[in-house]
Structure formats: C-alpha cells, structure tokens
Length: 112
Image (cartoon, rainbow, N blue to C red; front, side, top):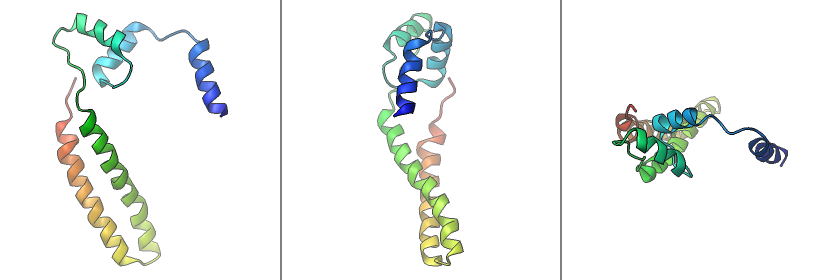
C-alpha cells in the first residue's frame, strides 16, 4: 500500500520526463499501452515508424518464459532432494521452453 501511494504521489508531484527522452525510449523499446501522444510525435519525425503489433506473441513468450525460469529454480531443488525423475522432467521442460523462446522470441528480435 505504501509503495502504491509513493508511486502515484511521485508521478503526480514531479515534473514529466523530457519529451525527447520519451520519444527515444518509445522508438527503441516500442512498448504497448497509452503512448499515443508520443507515438504521433515519433511518426511525424519518422514517417516509416510502425507500432509494435506483436502483443499476442510477446504475451505467449512471457508465459513460456515463466515456465522456463521456474524450471531453473526447481531443477537444483530436485537434485538436492534426489528427485531425479522430477529433475529430468524439469530439464526436458527447460530444454523445450529454451527452444521455443529461441525460435519465437530471440530470433524475432529486431534492432530499432
């Protein structure tokens, strides 16, 4: 609760970021959300600029990434408690999700 109040208060009581910084951030990261004013300003300066339209793919990669990261947590635990069958399953899931992330995320990263 305190962090939420601090975040909102900090946002409302401080000066907005420099518009040039926001445009540079938006054009390099291309986040989703409420960026229309900045998007329109970037579009004026860079007419060939395109919004990020890969929301569904990126959200699927987040779900896959959560499973990938969880396997890295549970594999050592299974090793320590000598649950080798479960560790093997976690290793298989880790390898599968690594391949999925390589093909569906890393290989599709673009340099902006």
